[in-house]
Length: 359
Image (cartoon, rainbow, N blue to C red):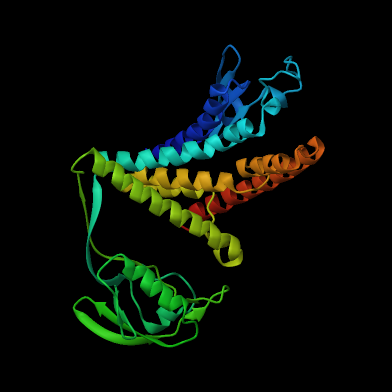
């Protein structure tokens, strides 16, 4: 059931994305020929007055089709309600609407989480918790004898504050000190001791010691005092998750070699969602919001076959006053689609093998 719940969340996010494109087109009177959830063979369909609505065999995907792309369409090429005959701004609204829909939906998921599951409060304790030692061969943390559950109270003469900012302060100090010995004050159960650790320089030149960091404190949930607090909490969480997502993609782009192994395909995403749902169905709100924000950020990237790639074409058209030649656009889009499909297949195979043999 937890796996089905995770798949349902992903399918819902795709529906929301495609509904954004569909709604933006229909509200502007632009013709839409197909609205499909999923890919592959048709399981069920309904032929509306102008649009064919279909559910297909593979739910992790979808698309909105326009008569512009259908060579068998009997609609005149000069029809003003065809997407390609609309001004650049109208087309930009349709293309970007999927991203906007995912962002709005993510926000309301977080509001819904606060109303149904509750607002998470943290009673912060001094220092930063180490929930896990990363599985690296002879990392600085392993050589120093750090263990899961240890709490870092001080680094050199700097006492870490009793707040969420303690993590960023500690991380910045470690990253700014590659190959420099630092003295850490560690609390383990009732014992407190000092150990020297020398951060290793990563591929990006920043120091790392090979641990995960987490706020040190007790977590609890409470119902919001009123609806305004629920919307305010949702806005704060939305801003936080969006900022972390954008920063994550920035690190992936600027330091791809070191961060590429963190890229996950749909199989791994479903596995994570299923694990969260198994522990608490309320976690699916947060899972859905995070994935929805990630879908939005991915789709706005200026890459072929993504919404951002089409917006890039429109930007060129808006600046030059004329679109790129159709053959050139089609060639770029087809190349991008092949690369994305290849990446998707690779991630599915890799994540499936990891689940089958490594877990």
